[in-house]
Image (cartoon, rainbow over all chains, first blue to last red):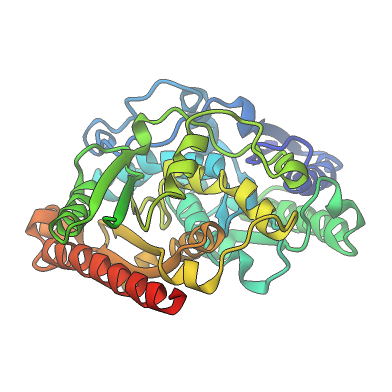
Length: 206
Length: 207
């Protein structure tokens, strides 16, 4: 069984810092023999914001028909879920926030309808990665993003302890991350660690 | 000249808890003699920031949609109330979309240095954050504050106050909340008086 990785590139700026960080992670994962990767640039994914209609609390599905229709099953069946997003104005960018908010359908399923969100054999075995970049170099520049990201992972059964963070500040203009002293190594190491953990959790051998 | 108050509703849900709370605030401000207006972001045609950083060169946004005239309007206001429910521990994508578009104003201030707000300007321009959340957690608004703080800083408004109410699920909506609606009305009246007072102080200083 391959380890399935679903990765969202949340930035509207293609090939920018957060996507580069993601690409480093995915390249390192791709070197592993048993990893299957799907990368979804949100810019092309046609995911509208949540309308706040709460219909999912009754219908167990979203009333909107858009890119989430095809992403829904991939989100709940992957083994490693990755969100890469830049910080804009002290929070994740609007496009990424729209994706997070659309996970309301999973929240409704889990907490309102009390139905399973993932298959039994995946429960407690999914890994999450949050990759983030910010232009400002303040230590607290990611503080507003983290609670939102936790919601994103919690509602699709990625436990708090299975969320891995790599957040790089002080990178603003496109390409700035290329000269960062540690980001690339950290990304590659994270990728290897997460795949090793995934293998352990899923009872697979490399 | 009457104090001008603009309310921006960032909820996709028309006339829900947050917009109702914003309405109570605007009514209070109107009672105190302010000119009030409301913009509903859901009905505005604009896209989120593209992160292209083109504004870092000229201080202008290359995306010409309804966000730009809205910012022009914001700059004619004395008080700005931004309202959003909490979704996934943060403000809605709609309000975040607008806030992210203020990057060109940030660029004018911090990169091009063509825009500067004096302390008197900031003191006489008040920003209010209005929000509701379903959950009862005390910290449910915490992750929203940094973006709101950054937004008011960028546009030269003092982040003056919050009107926030959690536990909407328990109270079955804002109208069931014991204090929030009154608080919003009172704060609307009060902020107009505060702005008038600051204005008269500034006028005296100028004379």
